[in-house]
Length: 176
Figure (spheres, rainbow, N blue to C red):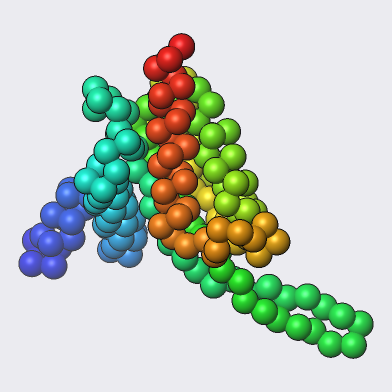
């Protein structure tokens, strides 16, 4: 067995790949690395959330929560009869994860978005019974200009509102 074959075999075993050809092993390795990267980012986000906001986790530690928010510029096109106009508006990519779901958690987070004037453009949610809760959402700040009053919405305001929604939901769950 040559050196390259040994390295591919080692890579195959580390990534738990069942494929035989070189390209497929590399694709599996790439997926494995992405999964590891996502886990590291989740752990870092959970650690950051625990460090910066003690209300984001329960006193028993059994319901660690993490919320990350990233800003992105969204291109919006509107078409007239005569010409086409394109403009940018701010959007947010919001990730929320908890080790265990809570009753009403999704509703509480969505209400926080509404209070901020964020329109949810796309969302992916997973949870069932007492299993982990995951929410990935794209929100647009278009509604914030019309609501006015408290200034523009930024990453920190969105993250804080989500953490408060989680905390409220956890406290409501404990009161029942």
